[in-house]
Amino acid sequence: MPVTTVPDVLVLGVGGTLGEAWHRGLLSGLESGGGLDFRRCEYLLGSSAGSIVAATLAAGRRPDAGDRAASAWAVHADEEVQRPGLLGRAARGAGRLGAAAASPLLPAALAGTAPAGRALRAAALRAVPEAKRTLGGLGRHLDALGARFDGRLRIAAVDRRSGRRVMFGAPGEPPATVAQAVLASCAVPGVFAPVTIGGREYVDGGVWSPTNLDAAPAGRGSSILVLVPTALEGGMGALRAFSLAAVAAETLAVRARGAEVRTIVPDDASAAVMGMNLMDGSRSEDVLDAAFAQGRALAAR
Image (spheres, helix red, strand yellow):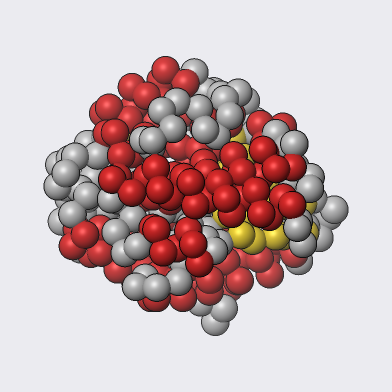
């Protein structure tokens, strides 16, 4: 089924440097092929890599804004972060941390306030050695965008001490700037240092879920488009299985509220280019090209 209309809610999942590039390429292809403008979405929800693109759209910029050949993470993450082994360990850790949210056998863990989900994540996060590396350059990039929390933007992160999921920008959640929230959502445990906001430490939103789709502000009749970079074929089989399981469970939750959900994952061409190391910035331009072609094809079907 072609993508012919702008959804009410756009949900952008985790995925590192190449996940961000895939988001931007796919959305650009959909816009080019279908005459769409995703800046018009009623709500934008981003986790980790997806939070960078969501903030870009909330700032009124097209998803391909800036240097076409380099994603924000590719520019600001150093060579040590781009090593395959480091990201592989982070991905496996995220899978373990998010297992409860992904399991249909634990539906209560889908709620950000569920005690079981909070306790599991808090215990797991305490066991992860705290990294010192920061993404200060990304923070400056985000500040320059000028995005603000205006009621549309939601950024997922996890309180490191309590294990609670926080949706920055949502009513009742802690105050933060967009740059602070995105940096927190990108703070992969064991890779980047937690981000302190209001005296509390926050880490990557992917610790809770690869998309946090169940937190989408959507009700009966709402349309949701979910992009899941980590549900790619190939050498990331375990990550793909975890991602698809989590999205399936969360889709049931939002459909129970009467919302319509459509999910897009990398096609074969995009997955082949993305490979096994989602922080390999040298592949960003190729991923942009493959994702753009995928988006154009989806718009034309």
